[in-house]
Image (cartoon, rainbow, N blue to C red; front, side, top):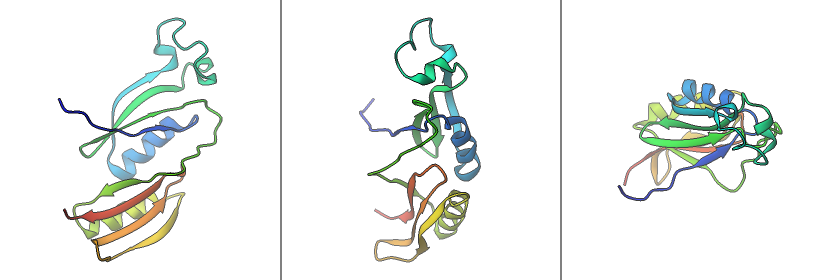
Length: 141
């Protein structure tokens, strides 16, 4: 097995809501979900305030296409703060870019409408309702 980098997102108490959103918007599949109450006794003590709420998500893995995005409820303060990065969604064609942009913009905001660029047949940017910036494009290597 080779090394790889995977994203780990902290939804601050909204991880299950995010999973449902990405199931609809991106066809995500929950590959695993562990709640704080599922941890062995004492394992969550002192970790985060979320450990006090056993039903919150300690860890989950979302499969989106061929990629795994891991996530948690984190500290459950209700304020996600995703800054300094974007997730890129590589669509198969221009029509998928448009569908994906539309789906991700529900409750969010289109930052750059999808259009043809010098590097992509179709490229756009959207911030979803959780504050994650997505670059949606047809990428040709």
